[in-house]
Amino acid sequence: MLKYVIHYFFLLLVISSISLRQSWAQTNNNSSLQAQVHSYLNSYNSEFQKLYTAASEGQWLLNTHIVEGDTMAAYQSALAEEALAKYTGSKSNIDSAKKYLALKNRLTPLQVRQLETILFSAGNNPEIAGDIVKKRIDASNSQTEKLYGFHYMFKGEPTTVNHLDDILLHSNDLTERSKAWLASKEVGASLKDGLENLQGLRNKSVLPLGYSDFFNYMASEYGITSAEMINLTHSFISDIWPMYRELHTWARYELAVKYNRPVPDYIPADWLPNRWGQDWSAMVNVEGLDIDSILKTHDAEWIVKQGEEYYKSIGFGPLPSSFWQKSSLYPLLPDEKYSKNNHASAWHMDLDTDVRSLMSVETNTEWWSTVLHELGHIYYYQSYSNPDVPLILRSGANRGYHEAFGTLMGLASLQKPFLEGLGMVKPGVKTNDTLKLLSEALDYIVHIPWGSGVMTEFEYDLYAKNLPKDQYNKTWWDLVKKYQGIVPPEPRGEEFCDAATKTHINDDPAGYYDYSIANVLLFQFHTFIADSILHQDPHSTNYWGSKGVGDFLKGVMEPGSSVDWREMLMGSIHSEMSAKPMVNYFASLMPYLKKVNSGRTYTLPERPVF
Ligand SMILES: [Zn+2]
Image (cartoon, rainbow, N blue to C red; front, top):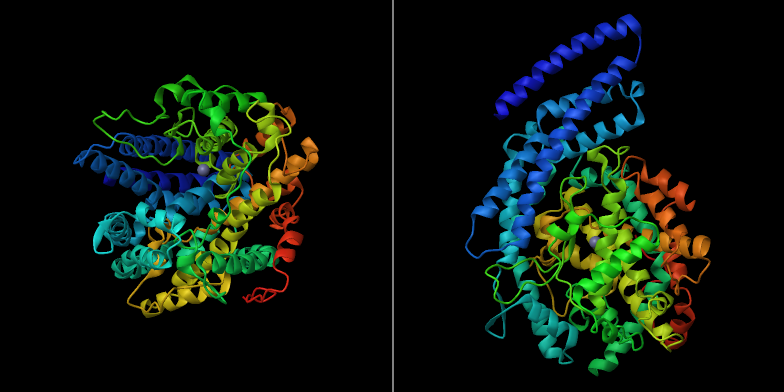
């Protein structure tokens, strides 16, 4: 079947190239070329949609209907994904896209964008890379199996990673914490050879289409070079650094008191409430906005319906009936014969009208903001599923946009005036706003040196500089110390591979800066909405019922990725991408932290060293 398809495309190309040359010579007119490209793109889009839908259905079943011992669903899903990969990476599609792109001056901008997208999709699995792509897919699957199938041990007994996380979140016993942290890193050693193998295969997969390495390939989707991506992430770190330096100093002293130890120069990794020190928000306990008690008086469906009401109040349409029929929104009953993935997600099954969400909604605050977050993705899907946006351009303006909008809605849904308006907190209820802001900073600000610094530069070294295996762990900890100011509780030699304990390093590689970009964009959009549309304090907004907010969001969402994201950002909020709105959002914390830290020794440099 595949052979036939390739052969057919080859013939088509030969025929079309002959007729093309003749027609240009005769009429010197672009319209016949554009018509040919139009017809090629039509057939690509419709074949892509068919294969993409099949792959989504396979994945949906795997995630919503997990039956122990059933290997058939996984097999079918893998087949569908392979078919999609084969099509997007086929030589004929690469040849067509390249050939037409060589004539891009004669094509419409929308055609050029689609051809570039086709070439980018092909870049990771080009047929011309031969068996390298298949080896990479197999190696990646076996790495994932090793990571999730690892048997964690704690104090000589089998344990789960949730249990280890729980100890790091709640225990005050440093001996226990240290053991839990070390236990959580054991998996890394078993992944080291696999990571080295993947480093080579990922780099080799993208070579045929002219990318220098895998990091370069991933950055290219943003339309920028690796060096530009590193400059961008450095600019985020520089912007937030003064605030991070205060938080780092505050945390060292705070934790030393908590554990009754001398104040360390750098924070021991096992002192923090997260395995990688990427989120410190659990260090503070914010009293005040208690919406759990109100939510408990309703059922889970009420939360999802309220979410829909909210989007309708700002001018979006109702969710389609298929959303309610096909989604998996609530926890399964205990006597169900199958299980499901409990992680919340939003799905665009056919890149058109079939939108679904996988959740396990319960009546608590976390699900309240999660529902608004996931519906943010759903309304984004719906917004760009319009006739002006071809199927293959139905995605976020860049990889960071989707998460930015989801998180924006989650953040807005927990602000006081929003909740007051819904009758979910009493008007004028007293809350500790400084502590709330501190807890947000320990999440959003603390994530930047980790995401933009450690993760991004480690993967840059790994792929762009071909980091040798015997330097993985040293490089990792040098970066952790430099950017996060964190050190391991005891020496970590090359017998370990602590980087590989992070899922993304193994199965979602070289794009971790997406999370930094999403967070940066979220504060840019939120600040713009608060300042220019609602004229409200960004810490205290109420989006509900504002058609202005809805119109603004639709304007940004509707084009999908059919326009350049930088131009769209400039057109919508009149700014380039910048972490400054995030810094401004937290600015009122600076005097507080400086006061608390006065007389304390700072151990991070005043400016980040790159
Ligand atoms: Zn999300």
